[in-house]
Length: 173
Image (cartoon, one colour):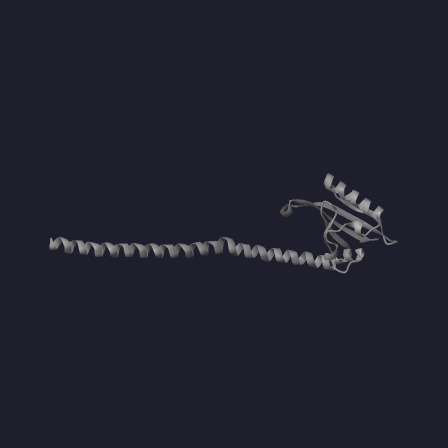
């Protein structure tokens, strides 16, 4: 019985050692798996995401340069003909200091009713038919002042917002 107890004690010690070894191997494997997953996510997701964000920032900067420096009026409108974005030239035409002041407003807020109604009808037709309006000669009046412009407008699908927009550019004649 003494030998049996010694053998049982030795088996318990070996069993505990084996459990400790298996637990150590499991912990090391888990750490290695975490490191590999992190590296995979970094290589597969984060690096391409950073590249895409950089490219998007570059495109945004180019659009901002265009919007800030082109003397023609450039504007984006939603399906209700409200301004979504305008450039500095369009802001000057509307009589606002900052293009952001016009966001959410429409031609009806700035131009004589006849001009605003014609513009709204043209934009509805563009959205309904999907056909752009190119080189339209328009007479616009604002507070008794008038000017002639050539306007081109086209429908644009904004997938991220699931919305239809109008993009337009007007050139003083």
